[in-house]
Amino acid sequence: MFDFVHSNRNMVAIAFGMVGLGLLVGSGLTSVGGSGAGQAYIAKVDDTAVTERDIANLTHGQDVPATMRPRVVEEVVQRRVLLNEADQRGLMAGADMVREQIAAVPDFQKNGQFDPVIYKTLLANSHMTPQQFEDSVRDQARLSLLMEAIGGGKVSSSLVADRVIDVLNTTRDVSTVTLTAQQYLDKVAVSDADIKQYYDAHHADFNVPERVKLDYLVLSRDDMAASQTVSDADIKAYYDAHKAELAPEERKVSHILIKVDDKAPQAARDAAKKKAEGILAELKKDPSRFAELAKQNSDDTASAIQGGDLGYFANNGTMVKPFSDTAFKMNKGQISDLVETQFGYHILQLQDIRTKSLDDVKSTVVARLQHNAASSQFSSVADKFNDAVYQQADSLQPAADQFKLAIKHSDWVTRDKAADPTLNNDKVREAAFSNDVLVKHHNSEAVDLGNGVMVSVHVVDHQVAALQPLAEVSKQISDKLKLERATKMAQDEGKKKLAALQKGDAEPSLSWSAANPVNQFNRAGLDKDAMSAVFGVQAAKLPGYAGKDVPNGYTLFKVAAGKATPVDPARRASLEQSLEQALGGSQAAAYVTDLRSHHKVQMH
Image (cartoon, rainbow, N blue to C red; front, side):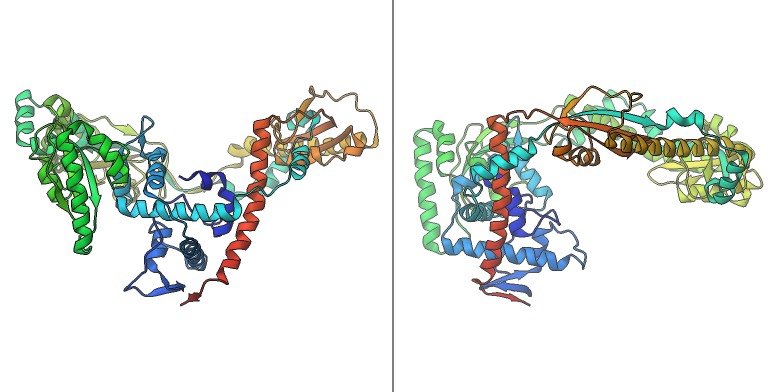
């Protein structure tokens, strides 16, 4: 959200102690502030109370485990210390700065442009008002200015940068060869005794729980709805009866807000009103200047940048009543008189009026009519379905024929789980293993899964809990043991070859890959352990050899000195910035600790 925070994330994280919790300042949408008047306080910083509301703001209302609570409290206290320090230093964030930073947030943009509707919707979903968010942005900007003041300078010398870049850019030419288990499989023997010994030691791996295979029928209200036919006349009638809900009139309004609190002194209210009246007078002379004057004067920072544009909204409580009442009485292009709300004085201009046609909402209407028709029938059909599977209990086929349903077939189902989500339900599995269904081979009663879904099952196969016979799993065990032994053989052989290579013995049988240059910028597919092995070869002993276990084998590395690639200016600048951030982070952390001694902190 803020250039400084993005470019100094590590420093800010260290300063605020928020790395572990993922609560890095600048990543959230809530503001930790306010005096906490009327609430029991957790701590006090100077004369400012830290309350439970501050904890909730920082954690976005999520529950904090007891073990983490002291850490969270400390983070809130640290933030308050920094905010108080910013106050004492007179670090302020102006309206223009706040407006620009909000407009730059990608989540609030559409096609690269700030969208006030998206902005307000996202804030509403986070249970936050624009004012709260703007206060949060303002506080964050002040914190960023403070951190920049104490940690934003250049703290790493060119000499240090040169040395670190030289280390990171050290290159090795690496060839590899991998000894795989597959190469040794034909050298491995597994006897019947080995298989039997493994089987006896791992019975738990081969136990199969009691299980059944099922035929089943699903009666679904949604499936019934899809088959319902609705006429054009029904669609039109429903649209006409529900037009206010389906296609409410929406109005696109721009406004200019001169903000003043409804509890402000009369002098302040009079001054705000006078300013608004002056702007209105200018607009009456030249209405075409509305966007220009909104950008220059409106205290609604979110819409001001768009010339006051609020986008489309319906008359459904989205806007406060005096504002909405005025907007829905205006003619297109009209500019209103002053509209007073609890936020201050508004001047409105109606930009457009729209509504949705029947074609726009036809699919919604059809779906509702189908659902309504199916819902009115479902209860009666469900009773008949239950009667059918109960009265002709020896088979599901009669019920399938009567209700035009397809009989479905399951894989194995245990008392604990089923692969099919429809059957993976406690009530369904309980029915499948009931005496009437499992032993007497009857259909189950129709099980109500909720949301208009009924299921009846019939057992077609049953296996009691048992240990799989050795004959069934013998090959599985044999393959496992062969792979394990072949892998061990490959790894042992690889380590022998590595020892020989390191002593200087020739290994003509090894087919090395072509050499690849490897450094910290270009790892050529090597993982962390491989990089450690390669760069663990001492520079004085190059060319040299290294190796490591890999899944199902062993990899050998032939390591030679490589030619360092010059670092391009952009990458060098990025590395220098990272160094400055790391060193600046330590400086910032020390600074925050020192601040605690200059501000009165009382833990309650």
